[in-house]
Amino acid sequence: MLPPDHPFRLALADEVHARPPEPLDTPCRATYVSVLIAHEDRERERAQVEALCAGHGVAPPAAGVTHFSTQLGSFRFKWERHGEFSGFTLFVPGSSPKAFSEPATALLPDGWLAGLPGTTIVAVHAELMAAPAGAVDAATLASYFDGNIVVGGEIGAGTGLAYTDFRIHPDGFGRFVVCNRSLTERQAGRTLQRLFEIETYRMMALLALP
Image (tube, rainbow, N blue to C red):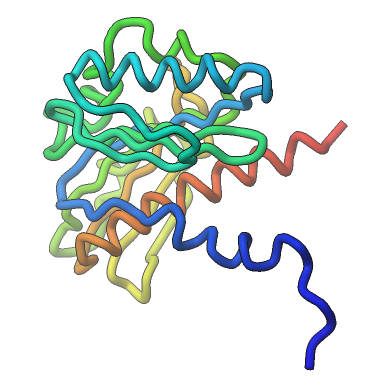
């Protein structure tokens, strides 16, 4: 027998199933924005999501839901409400002519992101691309990050590679590059979701610093 369950134990255990990753084809572009939103601004947040759906003729999220995913024209939109923050993710199939030159946010209505209540804690663009046959060229990799020092390496027992420079670029967004060697669609989606989550909780943890 165990000691009594914490009141939130089952809810926390089910959290991993409540927000399933999106299966993603390679190549793909994604953008993730995490916003700290006060409780009193939650209705404004929902209204902003509803307006985006209405503009594309799509039914809005049902009342009370905390996770919503739908196709809006040429991009897929995902909204996740957490305790302290909300996450907004956009997925667009295909690659840009040059990495990060055509981010998914370009498909949003002008001013939609700025119209969200709260303050931005994380904003990142990601490029999911096929891995080269040989080693990743260092010069090409550096060009994706404007010549900054890049960190990363193999993930998923060598099925992919992930890179970032931990910098906020002039457009206000960080960057991730994921090179797909043999990731399945679901593994690719899960990889991007985990990278976004790690970055969010890294930043949330750093808020505790003086």
